[in-house]
Length: 582
Ligand SMILES: N[C@@H](CCC(=O)N[C@@H](CS)C(=O)NCC(=O)O)C(=O)O
Image: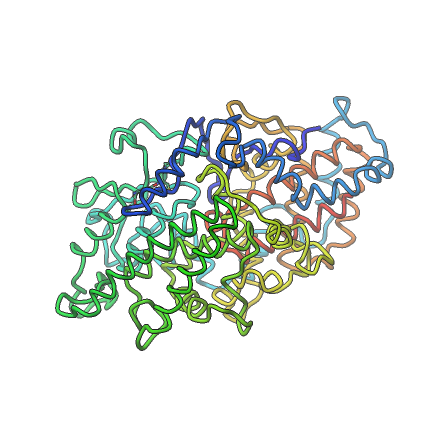
């Protein structure tokens, strides 16, 4: 039985459509764009050896250690660990193993599903969903394909509105598949905020895959982002951003006032331009201070706090608004955003140091909190925004490891879905605590008074691509791929366990229906399905189904697959089903 317990190497999912990642050799750390930070990043770069099996260098955590660590904190693992013996003894023996008649089991499942009131095929689920969706939600896929309406990480093309034509697009952005790269994020936000039409090419980071030869020819270092603007290749994020700013800086007369809006103060506002340039230096200083503490010891904490307080001071003195340069968002905010976001997530998880708090909670950083609130009013930001869980698992493979301190442990458990901060129950358990118990305030920006939107978003992603998602989840009970990858949640070469697919499909249908109509409504149906799984499948099969659901749950990435509230509700509903099988 292959649980993800030891083999945390698995594959990431893109828009819950499967990617085929390939092997990786080494990777640069989150390199910086200049000054002290460049030296810092280069040092991290050297310490980051992303070959699988590489040892523990400079105190960094090796990939296998990361795997162990994930195993130790994995909510399923702890649940399973606690209950493994009872699972074995209470499950009806059943045929199990290689004698299992999968066709007969799948037939029984199909009969049980067919008997469900209201229908339970994926088509039934889609029409149920459609009956609940707003007109904007209904238009989601067609808008994504056309590149209009609300932005999505799934966009391959972005026109904003139908007045822009595909043949007139002047910019192609190469950014990473998993939406992990902070340098890509700042370019992505700039394009969105300035409403510059663009195309997207998605490229693997080395910690989870290989890059196509065509990309390596364009960018021999392999680093992302790269952009082609009016036929010219730019391969540094800041060069891309400044070229976008200078090339697309005049708002169209009489048209959309945000189109090509300037994101830097006018030339003649020397004072504000000087402030901007001081702040850009501060951003790199913060980056260095963050890197030193994150990948090092508590000795670097004092310096980090000093720099963060300086950022707080700058934001407090910003005139007339909550952004760095006042009431309007600027490039300064976009330079800070990817790093402040990762800083808030990683300092909580690895160090137990809280920067972002829930609304109304006490904080030493009120201006930074207001800045986050202001950023979350922008679709250009919320589009690209990740969650603490995703960051906590994407940073170590990019950096060659992060160092955990004892104070971080309760937060790490909560972010990993293991236990709420009060330790009383699972943090990925229904009903979900708001703001992850005050650790990760992240609901208001998508709430809009409609709490159910997150469930609909998760069901949309599952039902649109259910076939591939089932196959993906079945890797949790399959075999690990060779070669492996530095990113502990990625393994493009993993093989699914075909025998589990029919059962996983059945579970995901119930999970989707429960997200649409409430778990209560399915309390009898879930018993029937679980009974079939246990009686026809036996204990080994049930373990495989559990492993598959847990595998999927742990690999829902934000923003790549869905927004945070949707990811949280999906993770919790998968746990709801898992618990019923234990
Ligand atoms: N100075 C570059 C840094 C870019 C960079 O370090 N990118 C990283 C990802 S965050 C990269 O592409 N690393 C190689 C890889 O992961 O494949 C810029 O500002 O664009």
